[in-house]
Image 1: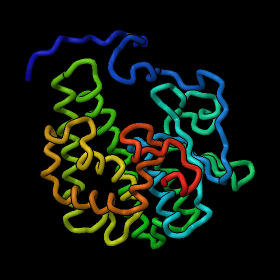
Image 2: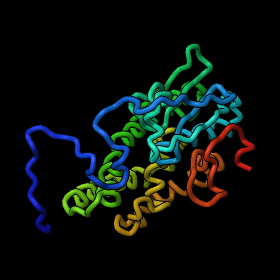
Image 3: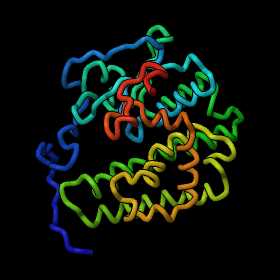
Length: 280
């Protein structure tokens, strides 16, 4: 290991606004709104405010899968929240999600409207509301929740840990890159071993656990997020790749990946979604 400059933490930490790195302009040690901005409300009961990041696509994939089943009540409006511009700190968004992270959902079929934040909570809420993609048998349900919450606990090491230090930090530092690379590869091995014996994470049935994990690990093995595919040797995880490709081939997944996506080729973008006609 190469030598690094020694750092002695101060007795009381102070916020350095010039800390650098990508997203430094939106990271801060305080919560709450920075400006007044009401959220738009469309014609459907379900109102989603999001961005097509790994966390965002989990929810749009589920909504499109519910519509694929013919559940008309799952129709939704999806509005873009540009986190790079700090739109997640607008007063309307903070009222739905005090944590100021995408995605956030408002269900206007209840009075008052039900707010749901945190992607896993939204997945569970919608799966229970419409009775799909979440097992009801206790053991199968426990397995699904286990893999869903595994993803919620594991992905921060992938995104906020590995992704930050490998791709976004102002300088490459060997220790955190090595530490988080080891953990991400361990996570991929967890998935690889499980998927060697199962078609989907919980067995034969496709569930919200697959949607949640696909959002992160499917992007990692199929779409080279952080431009780290070679560095992590993702091609060696054959079962994870097989599983991710099978999920991505689903028409609802292909649609869900496009919603609230303002980047990439024009045919892959649906920045706002208000109905099936938006995919044409």
